[in-house]
Structures are given as C-alpha cells and as structure tokens.
Length: 252
Length: 370
Image: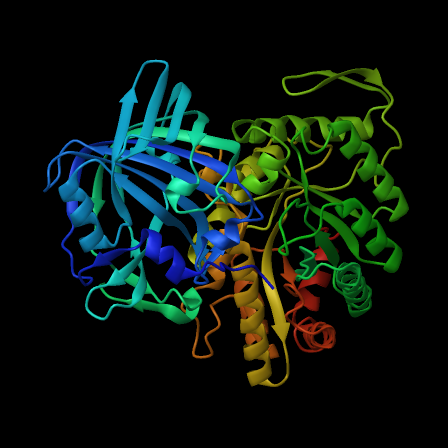
C-alpha cells in the first residue's frame, strides 16, 4: 500500500508547534512581497518521519525552502524563512512546515496565534542582486541555519509558478489538542523569475528535523514580487488520522 | 466506436518478485481474454520511477508479449517518450519496426513527452525542451521507417546517412498518435495529421469542442507521415457487473485508488516552472474527470463504472461527441481481484459491445476501418 507519514507528532510538537487561538482569523492582504523559493529533492528514506500520518510523502521526496519578505503588514515589515516537506493530504498537494523563522516578534506571535505557523524568532535576510537572489536564515543567536541562492535569473510568467498550500502542526489553545491547520495563501504575481537553485548550507537540527533533512538534488528556484493574502482558515485535520477521515471544514 | 484496454501496470507494495510477476501475468491474462472477446487494441504507457502507480518502464517488451498472446488485437504504445534523454529516435524507429514485424503489422505508435518531475528529473531532461524534441522526433520517425537510408542534421539530434533497419511490416508505416493532455495538443495532432490519443478534458461540451477543432484543423494538415490518421480516442475506467451494487462499489474503489495513487506523483509543473507545461498533464485531468459530482450512485458522468446499462450510456455519450475509441483502465494496485476484472471484460463484451458493432461495420464499409 502507498506510504504515509509516521512522525511522532507529540515529540515533534514539543519542539516546533505553537499555540493557535481558534480558527477564526481575518485575512491579511500584503502588497509587494518578495519571495525566494527553492525546490530540492531530499532523502527518500527519512521523509516519512518528517510527516504526520495525515500526510503522504511526495514521490520523489522533495522539500521547499522558502523565504518571503513582507514590506508591510498589520504588525509592520517582516521576513519569514521556512522549510516545507512536499507531501499530499489525501489527493491535494501540500507543504508540511517544519519551522518558520521570523525576524519580527509581533509577527512571530500573530502568525502562530492566527494560522498556527510554527514560528520562532530569527534573523532572516533576503536580497535581490542582478546576478543572483540570496537568502539567509539564522536563529536568534545568529547561527546560520539556511543559506541559499538562485543564480542565472531569467524572467518567466507568474502563471508558470505553482506554490502549494501549507499545513502547520499547532496546539489549539481551547482544548489543548494538536491540529494540522491548512493555510491557502493567494498570490498575485507582478514579476516572476526562475533560475538555478543552490543551497549553500542547511542545519537539519535547526528545522526540528533531527539529522533527517538533507538537500540532495536541486530542482528549481523562483523569485517573485507579488501580493499575498493569508486567508481565512478553511480546513483543519486531525494529525492522528488520514486526511480522508480526519479533515474538518471550518470556513467556506 | 472501438474499445481498447490500457495499461499503467500498477504494482502494490511490498514489491517482492512474486508481486510484480503476478501483476504482469494478470495483465497478460486480461489481454488474451480481451482479444477473444473482441476488444480492438491494447495500449500501454511508458513510465519510469512512478512507484506503485506504474511499473511499465519497458512497454516494448510488454507489448511484444501482448502481440504473442493475441491474434487480432492491435498493440499500441500509449505513448513512447520522444525526449532524447529517454529514447534515442533511432532506437524508437528500430524497436517499433521490429514490434510491427513480430506482431504481424498490428502496431500503433503513440508519441508524447512525459509530464512528471519523477521522470524528467530522473533522466535529467530539460522540461523546456520536451515539446520541441517531440516535434522533431515525430517528423523524423516516418522517414526513418520508410526511407531506405536516412540522415539528419537537426536541433536536438543528428545522424549521418545510415540504413535504419528493419522496416515496419505495415506499409507505408504504423499509424501515429500523440497523447493529448496539455491544452492545444489536439491542434498539434491535427496539424501533423496524427491521431489524438487520450483526450480527457473536463466536460462533454468541452470535449466535443476539442474534437471539432481537431477534425476541422486536420482537413488542412501537413502530415508528418505518409498518411493521415484522423482518429480520436479517449481514456476511461472500466468496471461493470450485472449486479448494480457490485458494479458501483468495486468501480468506485478502482476510481478512488487510481486517483489516490496518481496524486502522490509530482507533476512537472508543480516543481519546475515552465511554459512548456501549462497544465499538470493527463493524470490530474483524468482524476478531475473521475472526481466529478457523480450520479446517485456516486459515479461521475461519463465514467464506465456500474451495471452494463450505465456503462453503455457512458460509452454512447463519448461516441456522441465524436470519440472513435475508448481505451479502458482496468485496475490499480490490484484493488480489483483478477476474477472480477476478467468478469467485467466478459460482461462488457456481452452487454455493451454489441450496441456498437453496427457502427463499426458501417464505418468499415465506408472505408473508415483499417
């Protein structure tokens, strides 16, 4: 039978999950976001351990290394750096977020409480140069946990880009239960580019992945300027059940 | 209207050697029965690295075995990947010609380019290039089959003049097709005078429009081959049983399993942004079609699942929008027991096929048959 995740969610949650304050958040619409997104194939032997049983590993195993700079938001400008494991919830493509480093304390709090992002404070850097786009993520102590770039920039259409929705393991404050929260951002692309992806360094431990996260083979890189709407939460899942059985709709 | 069977060769875990052998044996048993029952053709994909979903990486071997097991059925590549990292065009010409000889002139050659990162990445093929290499390959293949000697200096490949041998048994050469999954490929097919294989676009209305565009365009085609193969086929699922409840229940299980397996794969478009792949390809298109709202039994419109009356109705609907042939997927990771697959073929042949025989006979009389 097809594979499924086999993460020990309580143990993972103790490291990474944040508390979410219900599922009724209002959307945030943020203009002029800068995104650097890398796809890399990762270790096929360990991907099952990086996903809750709700989710199925992508074939082949791959991850998304994603940094977004929001020049403005209800809590001011912030930059977020994430690693998402390529996966499926039922038949839907999703990215399971291991951890989100954010360089704005208010955003650390709000993203967790509103959408269940597994946020931690960090130093996140994104710069667009003529020859490359560079992103670096460091923890709050300044230790580098991800250093990546896109080189050989070339323009493409925004319609060529497909970013998947993400799933966040969070603890619901009301009942103390773990829950998987699906977040479906909407992107409106103003400028889009692709290039060659290059991960210079990656600290697996710092992404709550033990020693299991290895960037093994480059796939693609995109950079874009876009408007992003972090919408209302539409679906949550029980992380102990398959998505077909454990999904609940919370908003239309 | 003709009916074929279509194989992905889907193998459930655990992959011990007996499991894979059993699946291949089951497929060949189905093919032999389908030939006896009057199915027109057997097709199989070329896929690589698509775990559980398709273990059909050497279709030329499987199709050769099919040819040996059958007397009348045509055997079809559905499709052979026309990307140099996967298949050198000379090898395609040589292999297909040999298959045509061995099968006694029963080969159909579907062409295509792959739509998953699993495959394109695995062979280190450039997704930007696949449409271009496909176009170059399909223009060369008929010449390689028909010219005593062939030489070529092209964009993605070249060769000095050589005798590419053997030559196909069918003269001038086997019929050619292209897998139609991306929007607009039906126009590519028509402009080149080749068959449209596996059109699976949403609603019947949309399908009807695509077929019309194909037939309108092909009138002014510049054929790549020595003749025009003006045919439209589609892919469908098949499970039928005289007992409505069994037909619906087992059929829905087949749909659900196939959709689930296909969803685990990584479409090229999902991982590699390129204009070359404006859609996610056949698999999600077929999934979408098979995930529609469904009737009171939960079976989507146009899907050949259920009792024979319902399956007949679905096939008539496809016929009404101009489809010449329906190729049926019969199983997915053996979710349907082999005896039920075989019974389903028998029930279809007994209760559904006769309703189309007159049409086939008339078409043949009018010069539309082979």
